[in-house]
Length: 93
Image: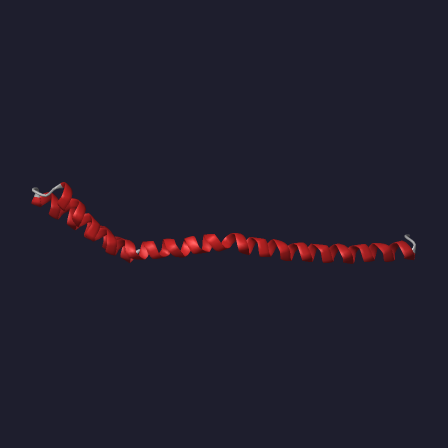
C-alpha cells in the first residue's frame, strides 16, 4: 500500500495533468478552426461554381463552336446539342 501523502500528491498531479490536457485540447480546437476557415471558403466557392457551370458552359461553348467551326453548321449545331445535354446532366446531379 502507498502512504496517504503519496496518494494525495498523485491525485493532485493527476488533476493538474487533466487541466493541462483540457487547455491543450481547447488550443488545438481553436487552431483547427482557424486552419479550416480557408477550406470552408474554398468549398463554398466550388459549390457556387458548380451551380453556375451549366449556365456558363452553354454560352462559352456556342462562342467556341462559332469561332472554331464558323462554316460547318452541322458540327456547330452538334456541339450546341452536346453542351445543352451536358448542362442538363449537371443540373440534375
